[in-house]
Structures are given as structure tokens and as C-alpha cells.
Image 1 (cartoon, protein in one colour):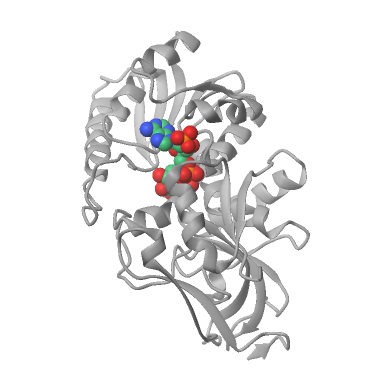
Image 2 (tube, protein in one colour):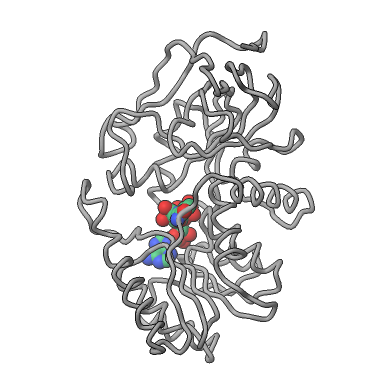
Length: 348
Ligand SMILES: NC(=O)c1ccc[n+]([C@@H]2O[C@H](COP(=O)([O-])OP(=O)(O)OC[C@H]3O[C@@H](n4cnc5c(N)ncnc54)[C@H](OP(=O)(O)O)[C@@H]3O)[C@@H](O)[C@H]2O)c1
């Protein structure tokens, strides 16, 4: 076992104790820091992402939600402080990125070494973490799921959000025309990314998009689900693709986590069969869920290069201490910000 001499023996972490409000159900705790078991490494977290997944976990609406209590936190960037038996290729002090899906909201976290990706030492950790789940999601949907060519038009829902801002920047860089939905207060931010904003609350939202793209769009990226998937489907040009990457549609009771996803699944299956029968004008619907692995690591490396080149400029909505996690999640719940909220455990 190799231990970094500066590593503290105390760990600070945030626990989600139950479903409800962030102020009541996120509790800061201190205990002993973990040590690295076989094949594992302990990482001192420099920045952990606050994401919509934690909102869904708090409402017990996330797919396969973890049992309470647990330490939330989808992704992190940090430095290795200790490696366990059998770990090769990693040394204390190495900068790493990871997407454990839970457990990132703490000072020290023990993770399987094989799940750690390299993170550039020079990048602001808040920027580096904002490119993990959100960046890889945006990158893979755009470059692995859909075949698009410069000049094509795409519709990005939530273009002001963590995923949407990056997806818009990547799409614009690829030469695509982007129509981006957001609430009106965020239209200037969406415009600054190079997209044409549309208010998703407009009664004739589809008409507003059709006015901008009378021939339809080559791709729709939708995280809302429900009936919106029919609107998106109708907006597709022949041969276009509808990517459903969540069903965050409001109105479901906590605990019914599977229910919002049923309409998306049903439509995906029905449209798969319809396409096989030649009934969709070449249009297709597909679902996306980010997962770790070799492609994840390769695409994260590509995103870090794009950040270095200045192509990606992740928006950091706020930097918070661990004990400010309730305020960070509240900001996300209130929809008052643009970009990514980040927890910085070393902030005092
Ligand atoms: N499938 C995957 O692997 C994967 C990975 C990462 C994230 N996600 C999902 O992606 C979604 C976005 O995540 P995020 O971190 O970017 O969240 P976020 O930062 O909170 O952004 C949410 C965005 O959605 C917009 N929005 C709200 N209601 C809408 C509606 N009815 N129609 C269209 N847009 C609407 C918001 O716009 P305003 O703020 O202007 O209202 C905001 O831009 C979440 O549902 C998350 O769970 C999925």
C-alpha cells in the first residue's frame, strides 16, 4: 500500500438521509477516511459535480435509486492519496477523474482503480469535473449515437443546463445549426453559445421551432420525456433521430421512479418496429444512458483536449463547500442558474 504523506485521517462527507427537501435530507458528517483495499485507490476529492441525478435521487425518482442513507455525488476530480494491493499504473499525487454515480460528495473516496481516468493536472478542477458526466453525455449523444453533418439543424432541449450548454458548444463546433430550448430569462446565455433560443413553455412550441426549421430538424435531444417525445418526433426531418436521454417530466410521486420512463420506453420500442416496417420515413428514436468504460475514458480525454483548445467553455454556476450542498441542490431545483454547480471539499 502506498500512502501520500499529506493525507488526513478524517473524512468529511454529505449523506442523503431520505426523500424530500435538500435542507432536511442532506446532512454533513465527519468520520474516519477510507483506506485502499485490493485493486482500489483512495482519492482526495478536489471537485464533485452537483447534478440533476441528485435531484432525482432526493425525490426517489432516479432509475434504480440507491437506498437511504447514502453519500451522493455522481462525478469527481481529485488526487490519488493511496493505492491498494495489486494496483499498477497509478501513483499518489496523480490527478484522476471518475463517475462513481454516488459517493463523490466527500473529501476522500475509495474507488476501483480501473474506473479512474486521467485528468489534466493544469485544468481548474471545477471545469474538469463539469466535463465528466455532462460532457461525456453530450459528446457521445452527438458523436456516437447520431450521424450529423455540418449545416444540419438540431434541437437541443435544456440548452441552458449542464448537459445542454456543452452539447450546444460541441454541436456549434461541429458546424451544426442549434435551436436550443430554455426559459426566456436564459435566452441571452443560449444565444451567447451560438444557438437560437426557443421558450419550451410556448403554447405552440412546435410551431415556433417549425418557423425556424420548416424542413424539420435532423436530431432532437430530449431529457424531458412524456408527450414531448411526440412533439420532438413530429419535428424530425426524414431520416432524423430523436435521442431520449431522460424522462424528467414533472408530476410523479417520489418512489415511482420507473413510471416517468415507461412512456419513453414504450415509444422507443414502438418506433423501432415501425422503422423496421418502413413506416417512419427513416426516422428513429433511441435512448441514451452514460456508463463508465473504455469509450467513456476515450471521450473524456477528447473533451479535455477540446477544453484546452478553448472549444469548450464549461459554465460554472457556483462553487460550494461540502456543507453548502443543500444550497447547491436548491439552486438546481429552482432552475435559477446556467451551467454546473460544483462542491469543493477543501473550501473552508
Ligand atoms: N442519460 C444520461 O446518461 C444522462 C446524463 C446526464 C444527465 N442526464 C439528464 O439530463 C438532464 C439535464 O441534466 P443537467 O445536469 O443538464 O440539468 P440542469 O443543469 O438542471 O438543466 C436542466 C435544463 O432543462 C431545462 N428544462 C426544464 N424544463 C424543461 C422543459 N419542460 N422542456 C425543455 N427543457 C426544460 C432547463 O431550462 P431552464 O432552466 O431555462 O428552465 C435547463 O436548461 C437531466 O434530466 C439529467 O438527469 C442524463
